[in-house]
Image: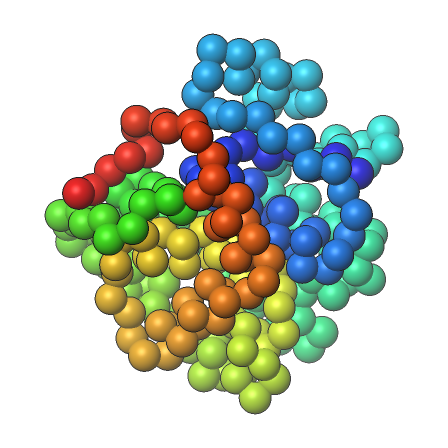
Length: 216
């Protein structure tokens, strides 16, 4: 398999698919294409007409959406273990993942992922605070319900953790204050060996995308 990704410092969507493959030690070739360069679109459309990352190539198959990639990997390489085994938990994990996949526009817009940056501050607004509070409730409720099974949102590592990993990175960058339960979840994600490796490589990148460099 080949996984086409963008800059590790900035590409939250790329992190999601990369983290699932890496956590489960599924062999893949990483193809990194820096974003917002003159040749970025031309290079990306060699792999998918969508012109976005991530893209997974597996034989003759092309998958060009992060959640679809995770679903495919779970079905075809993990015997469904990308999701919790219990029916109710699985439905809840899918709901959380879908909400993250399609929502939280204020978090995305006002707190862009920037793994290299530290101690950034943004002014924020009521809409952003509302979304942060919603993320806090999701993390806290999941952890309180499933903590006996392990430290992740649904006990064991799942696609839901992949979907929220970039948010953890964002909240760490901008010093977002979370409830104790949610803060413990952030520590779990940031302490994961694969997440640490992504962050290490992200901080070593040289490209700077001015539009993503927000806060002071």
